[in-house]
Amino acid sequence: TKKKKRKSFAPTGYCDSKLMNALTCRQLALELQNQNQQEQQTSNTITTYAVCPGFCKSHLGRSVATPLFVRGIMRLFQRTSAQGAQNIVLVTMEDREKLVSGALYQDGKIEDGTTSVLEGVGMDAQKELWDLTKELSEK
Image (cartoon, rainbow, N blue to C red; front, top):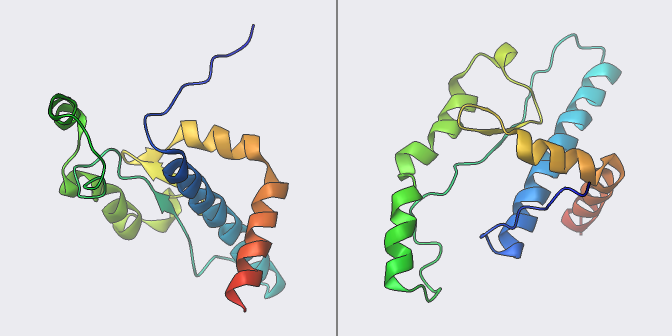
């Protein structure tokens, strides 16, 4: 049986940038791990994490024409900025041994849905994105 794809309400560009951020974070974790192995270090001195604050109330969509009743419904599901910031606080304050470098965190844990998407994209695309980003940033 074919598995139905869940349609996101978020704009494609937003979803793509979130995916690229998570892929870059995973590749950076691998690059740091490889560097540590080459330098024969036993532990990572630098770790990297991607965080997803969830659907927060903000001014990002201020230029999007949204009907008033839709905005009212959205407010029922939106988080405050403080709630969205909890994942940033988590990866900043939590003991490093309890976290996975390169992972995407949401709601205080590794976000499984996005992780499966990342695995579906594959390591080749992740490395290609890394190499392209590195090339463009060196110009």
